[in-house]
Length: 72
Image 1 (tube, rainbow, N blue to C red):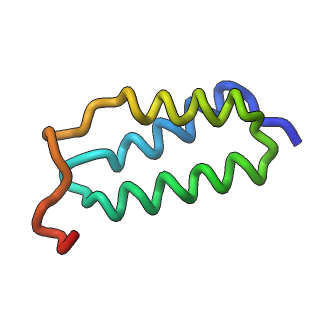
Image 2: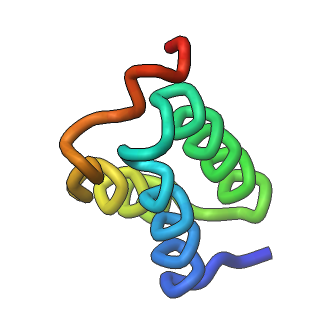
């Protein structure tokens, strides 16, 4: 199987949605790890994985932080 660059961006966008308020760090981490697992199993190249990681890393944290009251 092959993963398109558009799919890499789409999966990153889904993960970025959970990056910050109102979500907890745990919710974000869960989504991030599942997305990586999905991309790896679908056949993403190492370069595509790195692009995914960079897109997520470079995105700002919504509200400046994660939900502190979630028990994390």
